[in-house]
Image 1 (cartoon, rainbow, N blue to C red):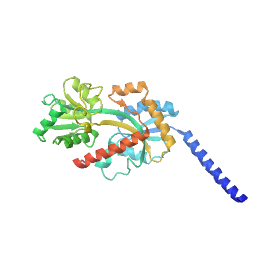
Image 2: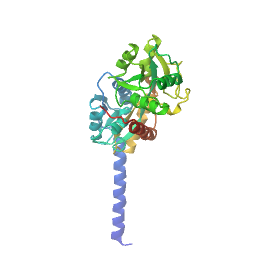
Image 3: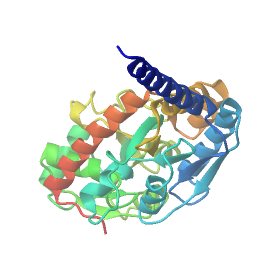
Image 4: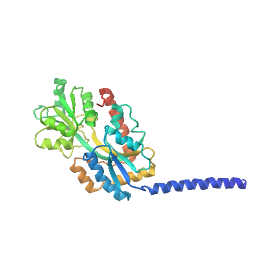
Length: 326
């Protein structure tokens, strides 16, 4: 080997080492400035509340300020687009709910792909949902409710927090699975839907268990079923879908965090480490449970797989039910 060849190889090795050290230094430098968590909902809601609780503890672990920024509008699309266009360096995260993966199935012309343009950081919470009926409805179990619906096609109505929400999609899945015909009545949130069922304006409601519980305790509604794999803490006497013989209808309303797709793996791992640490704090768990939410820490891979499977599951229901966003 000539001296020139040896020098050339040495330069290549040196360049490779320099790049490796630069990459390592970049990963170790994260975060180098304040971290922003975009909440695609207005201030004051569950998404905003949980994000601000987590931001406080993430800041302690990351050693940088962590700020929640509300970017509502377009059924979460405006905030999602903003994060998709952000630098993929871990300093901008997006809070996602099921609408994140339902939107592509019910809307056209979206400028981003939730599964291709983002990387999962981790799940944050799991929220059991429930079906509850007005006390005048004779059905006391899911089987009795299904029998009643079959006897009165289209006469029974179910309210949800809105069109193309998790509750709506799961309501349509119930219709397809049980072969019943219910009339969907969308509202602007779970609260108005509960008000409608307690007033006898609709037959039943599909809402978060935490929203149903106060009305159930007051005897204003009768909870029929919860959708989580285990019984909900706020409705301990209400059976699960699996107990009722419909394990395929298990589901929760959930939330998590994602970052732009090009975010380095080392940065992603650091974010997940701090997110899991925060979710496992006793004080965070107590606050979340007081609002009917269950901390649900995962790895990025677990949450990524969950987003993939839930996307396929919801897309199938949307297609078969012919759902479209209003």
